Length: 319
Image (cartoon, rainbow, N blue to C red; front, side, top):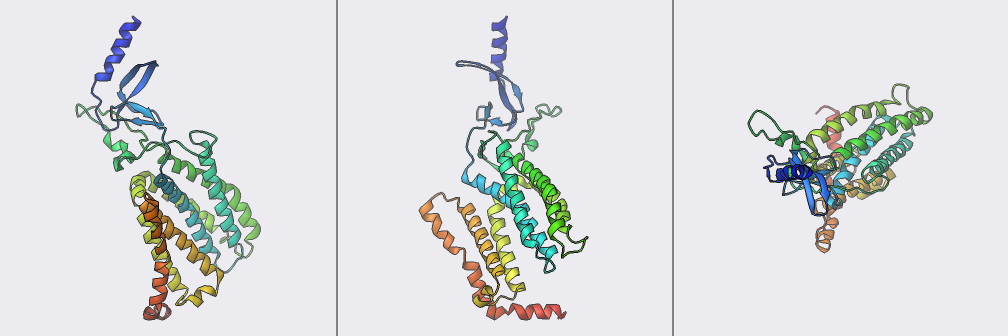
């Protein structure tokens, strides 16, 4: 009887497995004998191989995968810093402490996320390789063999690059709600009662937006984030330098804050360049980092022709 069951189950291996992401789960293994179940969804932490078998994700993330996760981790931190600066302004000296607290929150959230991910308790993760854009949207590739019944094979083919971002955002939100209100209440005395918590309220808006962005556009962001970093860093650097009326190198040295902003943008430029090149050939890609100061130098050399201070004054006067 047992032998007949094994032969029946073993025969399922030869059945056609439709769908791009449908696979057969391993039911029994004894030496070289492997018995697989019917074609369906793979368990979490597995994806189908070329033979339509569900295989565990045992690979180490590539450098590009880590850079993508770093980009998704930076988004809430940058937004925290932006809204802290926006609502603090010149009214309070507490902005620096809030910046440090936001950095601590995001750093601790990242560490905890890595620790609770598989394998648990260590600061690295196992993953499946991203092969194409459709790997991020397996729910769109559920087959319908008879055009009536749909075989649901939706699973995380890019494990854990998709769900780990949601876990990170959840820890960021929890840590913010635990730490930031107490800090702001103690040190933000220069702000009114309605203003001191506005940066926290802003986070309650942008975290859901980031979550939806990852849920809908995670795959697009995976391939486009290096170019997004470069474009946004160039635009924000130009806007900041023109709004601060920086027209030469002396204007940069007047305040330390301007140098910090400049170096922060340079780090973003370098991050974007490394992400695009992926440093496949180190000796060829590293010289590209010499282009990092180019946008700032170009702005300083051409500022005397555009005169941003005059443009800002005319805009303020309504001309």
